[in-house]
Every structure is written in C-alpha cells, then in structure tokens.
Amino acid sequence: MENKQQQKKKLNLEGLKKTYRLYRYVKPYRWQFLLGLLFLFISSSTSLLFPKLMGDLVNSGNQGTLLENINKTGLLLVAVLLVQALASFVRINIFTRVTQKTLAALRQATYGHLARLPMKFFAERRVGELNSRISADISLLQETLTTTLAEFIRQFIIVVGGISVLVWMTPKLTLFMLLILPPIVIVSMIFGRFIRRFSKKVQAEVADSNVIVEETLQGIYNVKAFGNEYYEMERYKEKTNLVAKTGIKSGTYQGYFSSFLILGLFGTLVAVIYKGALMMNAGQLAVGELFSFIVYTGFIGGSITGLAEVYSRVQKGIGATENLLEILDEPTEDILPIDISTIEKPITGNIKFDNVSFHYPSRPDIEVLKGVDFEVEPGWQVALVGPSGSGKSTIVSLLLHLYDPTSGSIRFDNRDIFDIPVSELRNQMAVVPQDVYLFGGTIRENIRYGQPSASEEAIIEAAKQANAWEFIQQFPGKLDTIVGERGIQLSGGQRQRIAIARALLKNPRLLILDEATSALDSESEKLVQEALDTLMKGRTSIIIAHRLSTVRNSDLILVIEAGKVIESGTHESLLKNDKGLYKTLSELQFAS
Image (cartoon, rainbow, N blue to C red; front, side, top):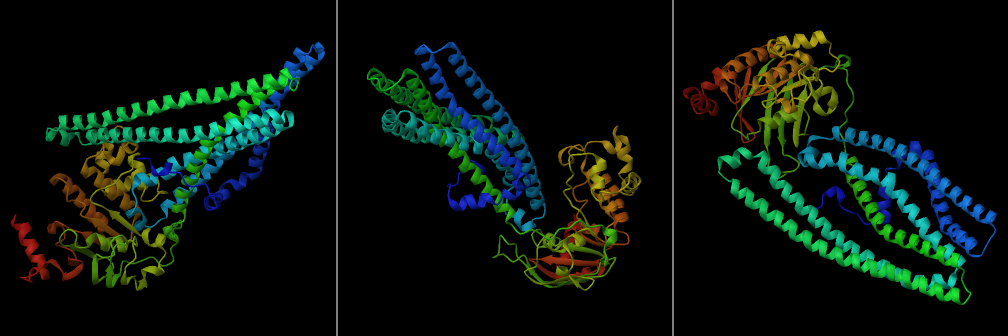
C-alpha cells in the first residue's frame, strides 16, 4: 500500500490555508524567494521568445533577407538563450538556498516539538511513522519548494503565454489547434492516471515482498528452528509472481498509452501542419510563422501534459504538510532547559500518593490503578512487588509525571505534582531500567548523558563507583569505545553498570530502579548490586522488584495486585501475615 506520507490531498482552499501556515518558516527568506520568482518569470518569459525568433530566422532565410538581418536575428536568439540560461541558474540557486534553510528550520521545529510531546502521544504512534514525518514528508516538501512549485509556475506561464502569442500571431490556425489538441491531452491525462495506479500497485507489491525478506532475515533463528525455509521460499515466490503478473499488465497498458500518444500527438501535429500548408498555399501564412506555430504547439502540449504530473506532486506536498501540521498541533509538555543547581525548592524525597486512580488514555475502560495510597519518607528504600500487570510500572510513570493521574493527588514535599515544573521534577530523578537503552556512540557519551556538562574527572569517578571503570579500561578505546546500536557491543552486566554510572553522574534526589539485576548472571549481579548500593545511599529509592531477595532490607514494601496496594510494611512484618500475598510469593521464591 502507498505510504501515508505519499497520500495526496485534494487541492482546495482549506488545504492551501493549512499549507500557508508553513510560510512562517519561509518568512525570514521571503525577499530571496521573491527574487527567485522574478528570475523564474524572466526565464519562462524568454523561453516564449524562442519559437517566435526561430520563425523569424526561417523567414529571413526564405525571403532572401540581407545577411546582416539574418545575423541580427541569430544574435538575438543567442542573447535570449544566454538570458534564459543565466536566469534559470540564478533561480535554481536562490530556490535551493531558501529551501534548504527553510527545511532545516522546519526539521528543527518538528523534532523539537516531538521531543516535548507527552508519553501518551508516543504510546499511540509507531516510531517508523514519526520518523517518516521528519524524513519522507519533509523531503516531499523539499521537492515541492525546490522544483515542483517552480515547474508549476513555469508551465502555467508557457501555456497561457504561448496560447496568447498564437492567438496574436495566427488566430485562425490557433482555433483549429485548440479544437484538436485539448481532447487528446485530456484523454492522455486520464489514461496517465490509470497507468500510475498500476505502477503504484507494482511498487506496493514489491514492498510487500521486501517485507517477507526483512522479516525472514530478522527472524532467521525461528525460521531455522522450525524448519520453515521452504515455507518462506514459497511465500516469497507467490508474492514475486504476483509482482510479475501486475508488472506485465502494467506494461501492456503502457504500450497502449504510448501508441495512443504517438497517434494522438503526432496526428495533431500532422493535422496542424496540413492546415498550415493549406494556409501557406492560400498566402495566409508564412513558412516561418508555421514553424513558430509548430514549436509553440509542442511547448504548450508538453506543458499541459506536464501540469498533470506537477499537480499530482503539489497534492502530495499538501498531504505531507497536513501530516506535519497534525504533529505540530499536538499539545506539548512545558519542557524548559534546567540547571539543577538553580532549583529554588529541590525535592527531599518525601512522596505521597493520595487515593490515586489511573487509566491509560488509549484504554479508558481499563483502570490500571484503583485508589492507591502510600507515603514515603526522605531517604527511604521503597520496594514495589506483585504480579506482572499489577500496576508497578504505572506508579513509576506517574512519579515521573509521564502521565497525569485520573483522580487523586501525588505530592512531593507536600507540593502537588502539578505545581512542580515537569523539567524541574525529572531533572531531580534518575532511572536504571531492567532493559538498559544505550545510545550508539561512545561509553563517555552514554555516561555523560546523565549530566551533559560533566567533566572528564566526574565521568571517571562515576564509572569507578558503578564498578564499570575496570572493564572500561580493558577496551583499547577506553571511554571512547563505541558501544554499538542499543549497546550491542557490551554484555548485559556492562550495560547495567554504564546505566548506573549515568545515574550516579546525575546525582538524583529520587532514584527509580526497575529490577536492574534480574537478567544478569551471578557474577555480574554481584558487581551491579554493589554499584546499586552505592547509588542508593542517601537518596529516596523506588525499586520495582521481582526477586524478593533484593528488597529484604527495604524501609517499605508495597504489595500491588490488580492496581491496588493490598499490603505494606517491612519484610519482617509482611511475613507475619500468613494469608498475605507477600508471604506466598516469598515461600514460592525461596523454596525454589
């Protein structure tokens, strides 16, 4: 199927109004753009002089005109060509500069807007779709601003100007041409759209076959493990045969189309020349005028046919604009650059959930949290335990203010979460997840992500405290070692320790740990746990725990089930409840 970014929108007033909103990105360069339009008008207008002067040159030679006049006409033609060439160069140069600067500003604005959108937006969108907005849609706009718009104006000038010149030169022959050419052009445009639909169908089917290849190669382990090589080969064979079948049909229709164009356009040309010859025989037309008329007719016919394709590209450009504007119209979070040292009222780590309920915006019928109540004192280690899907990660998301509670209140140091700027709150927190995401750059860049302005000494100290410095030194590049996409060059334990170093560098007031040791071997777990113990000292820590052995020393354990806090207390106090979920989970884990 055709990608969403290539969908065409109807060219109407509403669409043009929406497109005009992008004018603010062009506005700083509007005078350069207008200058480019001026040179576009000059190059298009001078091209209309070319057929007339060519006809005059033919007449000059045919009528035995003085050599001086022939040379004069020839030199005038050369001058027109030079002016046209120079104007085209300047126009393209200006449009390219304006377009590149405009699109850079648009890309920056779109990316900046995306970065400030709330999590609920990303929960409902696919990454590939969003990436296409910054790449494919803006590339479409680049084509529209650089070539399509100029081509549309140029061809419009040629059609209107060319017909006007012909009416002035030879009104009788022009009327004859206008009775024949437009029907052929209209049929060509309709037939052309029909052919393009087939071409798009071929492209869509090729894309589907490429999906099979991509999925097979990405999941080659499963293909081999299930012995499904021939099944995948058969799937691919079926799809490529369909591509070939559609391609053959498309080629047949293209053959019909080419034959029609040859008959229609060349037939029109023959008819015009025949009519012109009759007029020449009657003394109503000079040979040079007929020559000019034929060239003008070719110009006009080509431009009318080209306008259909340009119109199609303009529609795509409007579609891309509307797709971008959909994102730019989304409300953003109030994100501001924050220097943590300048925060007037830093949080101490006191947290209170008061009857908090929540459902995700995309699933309003499923209540994830139901009247959650608890309070955390500064410096406490608080563990969230319970079955998968009970709401533990949702509590963390609400603490980070990634979502707003449906009802109830969340307070930090007796301040409502809505009274604390989002940037200020998140800059005082750090998260060490179970599935660590590392950027594809160097180890230094990944650690420094916790504090972009950190010094080299601070980075090394954080790495040492996270038990990461020893393995970092073993790499030839040390801190300059490239970790690869998502940190693929490092082991799970190494990635965890890099994430801990990142969090240590940030020196957060509130630390969130999402079972950071659950997927590690015993040796890595020991090193990571030591680093975590260092990280948790002196700060409030919220720990999502699946292994209860890691939270025995917590100051508060909250047992979550079906979105409710069903038990709370210390490890020892919870074990005293013989019918409690915590004791059941403990017995199951420690017995095994």
